[in-house]
Length: 367
Image (tube, rainbow, N blue to C red; front, side, top):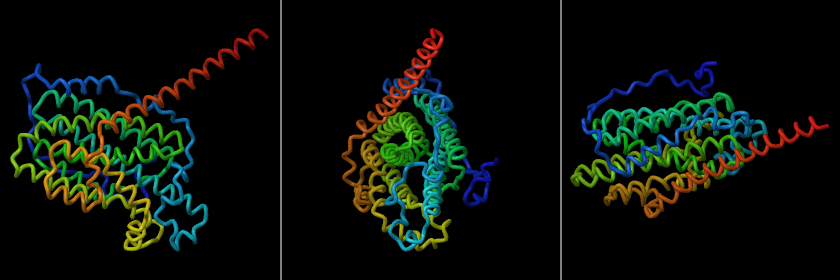
């Protein structure tokens, strides 16, 4: 079955073309490199994994409750529409929300793959080219995994959200080599990490928990890469150049904040866009979700040296300014540990099952 047969809404175009700008840069210096970045490149090579094998795709998923989403997390909960919905309707609503969330993850990962490839092409330093090549493979794996989950377990996809598409387009059209780092590594990936983490830590469903934990293990390296490269480069910028980047961050953060409402889902349930936006803005869960989603972006932006007065005011307006003091290194260390602990638990259980099978076979042979 074609992916187009599974879209809840017609994506209108099968291929989105973004005109490329900027220069491809070759470096003839192959021996020099930053030790921290080369160490990250080595880790990127060591940590490659196969999504078809590491993830247990035999786990069952209920398409009408793929994430174990509580009623309170749904924007319609408590409204006049909710009172009229049957249990079947509520299951369909959960299916649509999960499809919308994971579809945006999927489209974002394809965008990350393209941006990582663009960084390989445009970044002037060989150590950064090396690492970006490993990230391109990571992002391809993530897109593969999210696509498989949507196709095989949910059976529905949503087109890319307009605001996410706008930010991706702005990131890719910019001719400055650092903009794919800033738009993708800091903004889109930072926001995605927080969204992944919130679902990973709240879902009681083993398959999405595995997917998100393993993807986040990779993404923690990607954000670290962006921080290293941009922190070094942004120290050299003029005040005017730094302000240009800060304006891009401000616009991108507002776009990301406004894309998180899932209005498209409610429209598919016959609710007008205006009313859907009102329900979303009134949702206490959405307000909490939004704040948590900036937990990775704000400290990263501050860390790389973009912390001008206008940017700080924008974060005060969004209610996320205090997140600038969050410990980003601790969050990423936890992402790594959660994935490794999940591996230990899963493969220890599989080993115990194999031992039990062998013991049983020996006992039957003796009898």
